[in-house]
Image (cartoon, rainbow over all chains, first blue to last red):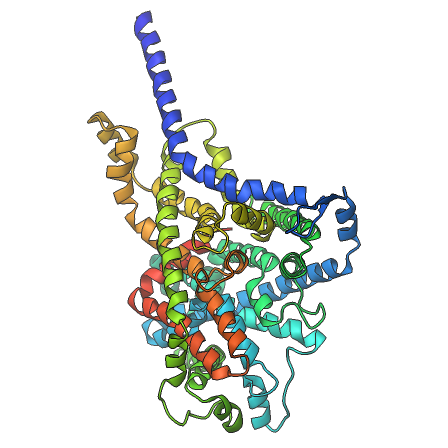
Length: 305
Length: 282
């Protein structure tokens, strides 16, 4: 009796060990690559942030927390951070409601409105860089789309990207053009995830389509909408490609974001020491905000079911 | 009866309004594409003199021929090589990692999984300078090989998240019965789990394929010469040479989007599914 019990224990132990070994083998490549390309660089960025360094020469001067003190008082950085926050708010307030309306229309319209779906989807296929270039011409003062329309209506040329307050909103508009289809597809998936029986039951109970959407479908979609908001938040804080290509952060700092500021400091002005400080500061802000909001909004994200 | 007719009228009006706004969004989305395609067929001065929405004088694809002659396909094939190698490595190793994360019991499972998933919100810019330094040291700066590592690394978190969720849906019994028949963990993975995860892998391939195809920041930082530049960089390279010749740049834009549009028309449903799968990341 006793010996069989012992045997069982040792058997399960050896099984546990073989599981552990197998798990290690399977996880090793992923962990190695992430360690090399994500973990080590993050640590290294924090390390470089303590130096004054141009990125090329061997001469690296240790400045301690000097760069960090500079960052705290750097008006350009905080202007960029403010633009990031404006981008977050505008993105959530435009992309998500529009996407929800589009998805609702497509869901209610069914096969009839397939043409709309295909065209609305198109911006998703273009890279941010291509969109940036396209719109830097499409919004040009001379020969741009908006200027042409304005002239046709009897107005003059419109300079959207050249002046400070408009430039940021023009760019935000382009970003909305780019990302609205993404959330549309996302919400469409949410709609198709709702059981058809629920719809049928609602209609049999005498509700109209509008009532179904308002009182049944939308409440069921709430978690999907929340996730979409978080995605939009994180994406907007990290945003880079399109603005870098379209305006390079200009005019002045009108459209500067944390990422474009960091990039220009490091790779155009070769201030890699301070550039690293900006990158590290950005990392702290983005991760901090993302984690806080995630914990507030979705309590159980990332947990195994 | 009257009430029924009133309802019907109301519904008609609602649909009319909905269609009105739908058409407006259709124009907002479509006009930039029309602008791009129309002008890509025009001559340099034709565009500005005659107005941007006029039909071109001739549909002869002169700008396209010019762009192709100036080495467009170099960028294109660079992109293809980077895409294929990155995807192959990425899919294989994330499938490997997702297997123990979804189907084995060991102590560190939850913390490792949480850590991998947490990496999704990391801005790539925090790694840019060290990766740049590393690439110059390893002599892979300005080669296609330098782009593969970062592409794979930053796609791992989403991929593991999606694949782990997917593999959890495969019933446990299949594996158990194989184990009784004497299958080890490794054979289990290659002959049972991997084939069953095919749908998950294909969605993932599409989602990450789009991202890698369009990747810009690393490509811009880690390459310098034409032999290593990928498609997103082709646009700025052509712009450097033809800043004033807008129609040529429009032709480049059309050529970079075209492969995606062709893919879209072939794999429409799968592509949508792939993007949706990626959307669950957070």
